[in-house]
Length: 178
Image (cartoon, rainbow, N blue to C red; front, top):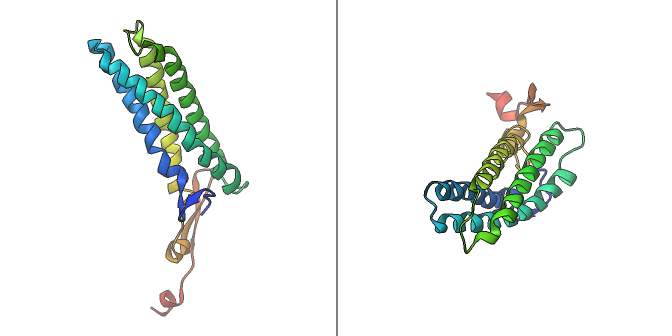
């Protein structure tokens, strides 16, 4: 297991990522509905979710960075995937932070030019989706943050740069006896 920031043996980064993903998606929905009907509630919802999304993304980034910097072996293909994952998340965070800066002053009044918020949050959600795909690849292919059972370790695939290059299957005594 490569995670360095854990609570009771469970990696913290995956525990926290649900908050920015949900809030970023809600921000996009809020801007879209506000653009469609002009009801101030939806703009305020987008702004509030954006605040929580940016804050929780910063919080989730801390253990993610520690896991990347100190948990993934330097010679692993997971380093490149992790760097791209983090980079996409930083871009998404920047897009949502810019959107927040543009609209936070419109809490008590209508916003003109909501297309900018819609565009920034759409691009931010797209980056978040890409980062999520790569995050899942880190878990699924490279087993970042996973403690394998002895049986899983016996059947561990060797993955280099995203390609399966071998199956390491060692037979236990019970397998050989059968």
